[in-house]
Length: 313
Image (tube, rainbow, N blue to C red):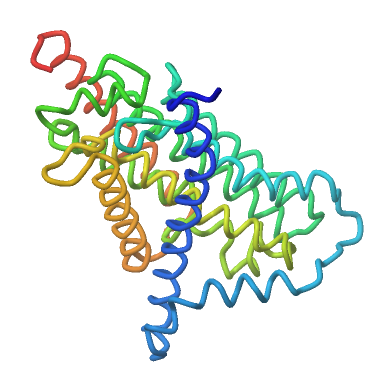
């Protein structure tokens, strides 16, 4: 016999990727709407644009590149959406997560590292100049945002006294962490855009490199890579809810509804910011990451630590 908790768990394993795919599609539609407005096309057509593009890529033949390491290339491409799905498993929806790990924050950060490796293999395995440079750009981008991102996660964990994502959400019953640690929240949002190589941090797949790490993948391979990019952005938006926005806390509606609404709001903010902020060069982003973001989030972590020791949190 399967008890109620096991049934919810197994249904969650199906629903979590489905919800992630829905949010990823919404991010793609938002990006398409921005492009449609810039070109004067009807914005309503953007809603179907991701589906049309996906159908076209599924029907297109895969490109073969002489000298490519096909196995590593395909493994790197596939690991991008896999990292996004694995990351979202520790995100609670309405107080319940698929994988309620005691080290959920560490797990989420580890999936980002998996994404690093996947993007590098996607660029390096293709045996392409553009892909290799795009892979290097992503490594530089990752080195620039990883420490600020890690300390933003750590600051939320210190405030709750736990690495379990559900405990962090539960610790915000009185006040949301976005009010207590706004600098960590801003740094987290910036790093969410960077880890998903989303504008303005899309230089790893930039047009000046003919697509960079995404220059050679075509057909289903390209679809998997780009879908993983959107899914990682959606996963990062969902993770912001239990870390800084009180999880499923809210009036009138059930907890799961508040979790989904807050995640949608964060995702909309990220997509909107990606369309408004000019592209950032890698050297400039590296400078900002080490000189501005890292000291800022370290000061925030220090302040939160003092508050915890003093018993104010």
